[in-house]
Image (cartoon, rainbow, N blue to C red; front, side):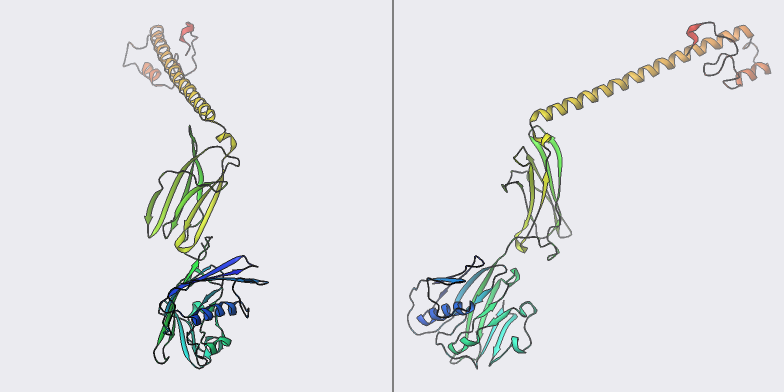
Amino acid sequence: MVVCIVLNIRSSTASVYFGTFKHLTVTDLVSLTATLALAANVSNMVCLRTLESLAFICLLFWIGASGNNQGTGDVTVKVKEGDDAILPCSLSTRENIVQKLYDWRKDGQKEVFLYDGGLHYNNGRTGQDQQFRGRVSHFPDQLQFGNASIVIRNTTMTDSGNYTCDFPRLQPKRLIFHIELIVDVMLRDRSEQFPGAAPALWTKILKVTEDGVVLQCEVRGASPKPDVKWQDGDGNVLRAEEPQVSERGGLYYVSLLTTVTKTSTNLFHCVSTQKDIGHRTKEEIYVPEKLLEDKSYYGASMFIGGWFTGVVSLAAVQAVLVAIYIRKRCNKASGRLRKRWGKDSGLGTNPDDPVEESLHEGSGQDRNGVCNGESVKPLQDPEDVC
């Protein structure tokens, strides 16, 4: 087992290299540590030595390393997104490979770096995958010692995968080294980078209850499925209801409710995370102090609301009763006037009289005694007024 930690003092970052080998020799250890030193442009590297801008701490655990058989090893390299990754590949025989051929590939398909007797992708050779153009380099001064290691600059999450370092024409037999690169992705807003990244979140105050203020957060259209949480102003995850999730057209729609109470800031955040694509977005919402003061606000608001609703309802009922009462009085007075006018004028005794018929068919203003028209004859009874 080999473990090597590379610390960059200036950037406060670290890269970790470790792996297991079926047949490990002292030469393998020397080649590996020399490669790491070269990557940082540091010569005569000594373990546990602090340098001006870079320090290497190599912990070498040698288990069953004996014999002169050279074999392939499985190595894992872990770096943070944006850092440079060194992928080690060295012949244990330290054979000069200046005129040799070796080929680096990712996931068995993508051409990462091909070297053939001095000709490679950085000096005119074509065929390198677009993903790695201008980002991969080797160590020319180390070729004479059998070192075929490479450096991938400014790593991204898409660089994670399985790499092979292949010597197809090596004698007496072909050798292939396997290296796994793991890029530790930093969660950040990648909405412009990935179509399925969750867009801007929707937050709102849904209602006020006895327990507090209910907040709602919505993710509208995201893939892969996002993990949605509510947090307070200090970043503590809040308890929430079971999220409501639906899927339409391959996109996920998520709604999450939480009930909050008064805090020091009354600021709350809804956070959506999609680890598979390294995407994270959040939205902040402020809850007014008066909504979070105490439960009496909720009780008072409910009392005031109920009292107001009761007053309005009572007033409406009273208005209807008054309207019915006035209507009945009008109808009653109008009937009495028609009867009185009929007795005084003699109308109503001869249905064939054209004068009487014309009086009955006239407009409200032409007929004497009609409640909604002017009366030529004065009213004698004060109760006849509508």
